[in-house]
Amino acid sequence: MEIKKKLVSAIAATAAAAMLFSVSACGGSSSSSDDTKDDGSFMKVDVFSSTANYQGTQKGWFAKIVKDKFNMELNIIAPNVAGGGDTLFDTRSTAGNLGDLVIVGMGNGRLQKLVKSNLITDMTPYYNSMTNVKRYQAGVDYVTKQAGKDGVWGVPGGVSDSSPTESADGIEPTAAPYIRWDYYSKIGYPEIKNLDDFVNVLKQMQDKAREETGKNDIYAVSLFKDWDGDLMQNAQAASQWLGYSQQNSVLVPADDDESKITPASQVGSAYDQMIEFFNKCDQAGLVDPESTTQNWDTLSTKVQNGKVLMSIWSWLGKPRMNSSENAEKGVGFMLAPLQSMNVYTPGFQPEGDGSSFIGIGSKAKNKARLAKFIDWLYSPEGIYASAANSGGAACPEKMCWTTNKDGQPELNEFGEKAMFNSDGLQVPAEYGGGSYNDGISALNFKTVNANSIDPNTKAAFNPQLWQTQLDKQTKLSKDWSEHMDGAKTDIEYLQKAGKLAVAPGATYTPPEEDSQISTLRSSVKTEVVNASWQAVVAKSTSECQSIFKNMGKQIDDLGYQQVLKVDEQNAKDLIKARQEIVKEYADKK
Image 1 (cartoon, rainbow, N blue to C red):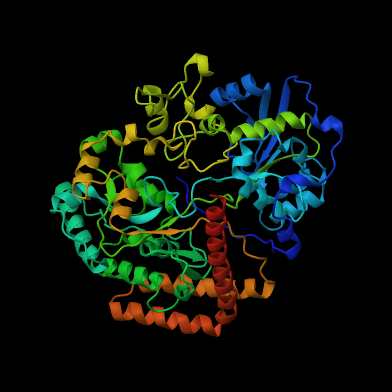
Image 2 (spheres, one colour):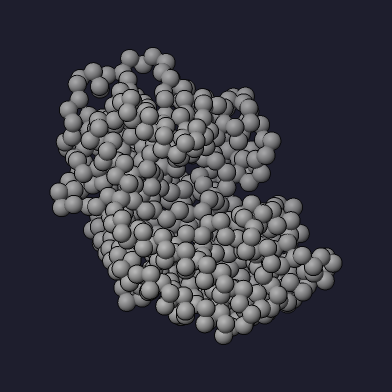
């Protein structure tokens, strides 16, 4: 899974926009009768996709599905591949034709500009037929609100009709303490009451690993710098172990208690606790000395080569070590039984993930067919067709899965490989042939959260949550389950143990920031990040604490209190948005 990026947008929700929040399908720009017509002929569709990592004609099995259903061929235009940042977007916008289909972000006022410049189409004339999209009306309404003008301007990604108070993470949280379970088992599964215990356990694991392999370049902890932003990213991510998420320079509690909104730089904050944890690890000789200079790619390779014993995230350790072969040997990363953890997890987002949306370009032909295509992407069939690999929806029915005699979805042999071991996998000719990976949808746009429930199967779209998949145990998963109260997944264990902190799934867009605040923020975050790393490698706990405390004074001298005022208000507004989405969802039930 890719790291979940923080959304920083620049749209203020005005009172007028709020009035436009409800039913976006009842107004907007007028459309001629020709807009609703479709001649049915073959159509090459230009798709401007800011999420795509491939440019050119869609290939393989997904291309065959689209051709067979819609008589269309997708030509992907990808700024990520073309390079130049926003240059391609600006050039095509100036020419008045962004694309037939448009997948772009809503931030920085972009959606409003697209609407004002008449670069995207109001889909109101087609909306009555978009029955799949209507399941996610809250998401459509959110796009309308951000557009600031009545109409159906697009549909956001990451929507769900599941409860915003239920974890959207599926089988495992994004950030939690993961350890090499094979070495943990070899030292006798010691109790881990708190972070100090965790340091001691990691020391025992490192000693055991070095003893068994004869390699002294194995470290319990390995960190990296290249994702640092307002905070030292690794410590910020680990703060999620304690139930907090980041909102710029402050930490926001999952339980929506405003009194717990905390500056990360405050002594005793969850961020401070993780800085001190890493420092104690460093004092014990557990931190890779290359942590201050290496990048993500180097760390990733070390994890894959067995040189790292702890992973801050589920998606770092597990995919690089828990191969089928290793898992059958009992080797791999699994969630540690840290008793003091209260792991942050986001709830499902009825309004979408707030990052990107899909719409129709104003110059497109056969708009009715494009509207049908968008609607199909939000149908169960379209969700499966948009599959990639593990962590998302299963690939298409029949090709990848069937229902068993009990009516439960079950991966077939091809589907098992496609989801978990797809390198070199070839698709049968009847489904389009070619490489499975090459045939994955190049749109790279996930319409619906894959952990949501398929109304047809009554199971999640994600096969990792299917009972038929959970029943398949390896030596590694079986041993972990036996020591974790019989849980089959990390989320199940955390729920049973009362160690899961669900933050309601609100879609919140912070208002545009004053340039003076942005300038102050730049100076503050440089000081925070530098001091955080200095604290991690301090020679003693007292020195670590002194550096961190002094950092707070330094940033105050830089004008941090002005930045903090903005960040605290945004955090309060986020909590308010969470409370509102919970109420709205409850009112609809």
